[in-house]
Image 1 (cartoon, helix red, strand yellow):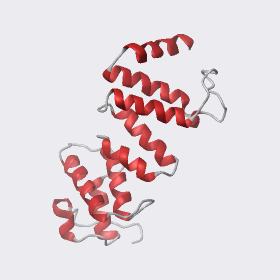
Image 2 (cartoon, helix red, strand yellow; image 1 turned 120 degrees about the vertical axis):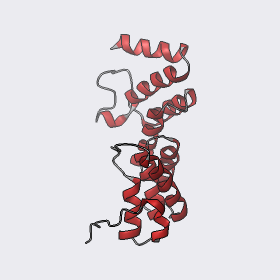
Image 3 (cartoon, helix red, strand yellow; image 1 turned 30 degrees about the horizontal axis):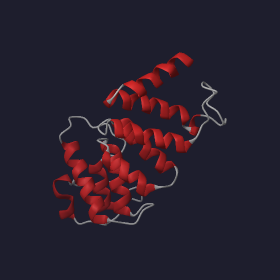
Image 4 (cartoon, helix red, strand yellow; image 1 turned 90 degrees about the vertical axis):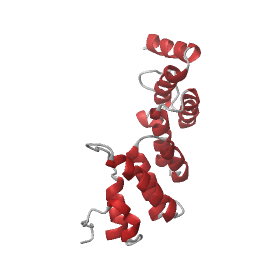
Length: 176
């Protein structure tokens, strides 16, 4: 274990770009307190678990390579778990992960944990839906096309015209 940590530290010091970002991402995971109920990492007893350290290291990983999604997604998820949805949205929208972008757009459209911004939320959902339409088989947890249809058929927050070319023709709402 010490040898692995040593190699990770060496890469952080000598590597650049995505290799440095990946090493920092792995290091950040070691500091994440969600890994354990203990004060120290059970696999690396000299590493005190600390969410602030996790966040700082993830930000360094993003600085090293802003196109490497893992630290961006992870940081957004940390802010979500901390109840800081505005910050989570900031990182989710920087990601290329369509499921996370969909989640952010839905929160904004509904005002779920954030100040409602229906226009911005729908715009984000449309952008994500346009990307999903290009994919043969979308496996994301949050489907932007479904979310747009829920906004029309279930929540009645947008018009049929607002669906544009993403109208599924019918949508079964949970309260039906």
